[in-house]
Amino acid sequence: MKSTELCINDLNLKQAIWQLGQAYIEGHQQQHNTLPVAEIDPESQSPCQVETKANEKTTWQVVKIDKEIDFKNINNALDVVIHKDIEDYFGTMYADSLAVQSVDGKLSLLFPWNIEDFQRLQENIIGHIMMKQRLKQKVTVFFAVTDEEDMIISLDNDSGEIWVEQVGCKPHKKLANSMQEFLSSLSFDFSKGS
Image: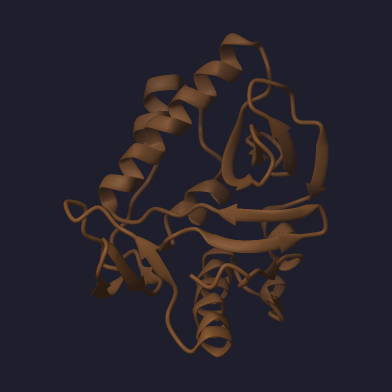
């Protein structure tokens, strides 16, 4: 485990996420003498892929998203304006999930693997928001999963605060006042070696 050891609070969110991704790759290389490894679908190539291995695995690295991707389709379909921190978070880089540790336990930060994965992610976010609206709960947008079943880390779409919530329930534990504050509190978890 290696702390992020970054002064990302002094950066804008996109810069902070990019620096976090690069630090994750560098830390993994120092710990395991290799880039991280991801399981892949041969039909779904990613700009992250470096060297394809046997058994549908590849080494990977973070890659900046070179064109603007946004959530306008969600905004239009659901009459909800997605918080800018979520647009910046998911619009910064292609990557596999990043294994991190928070004070509350292990998490996986979710990122799009390629543009098709970003579109699937949007569909999942639409489903999540529709469920929240149906339950008459505040809109949240998930961006990380925990080791606990059905527990996700989400951003309150109104305030930008970061919360733990059980799928289908109201958020129950506030973790940070902002995405920036939350990300700066994390450390990397390289225990799985991939």
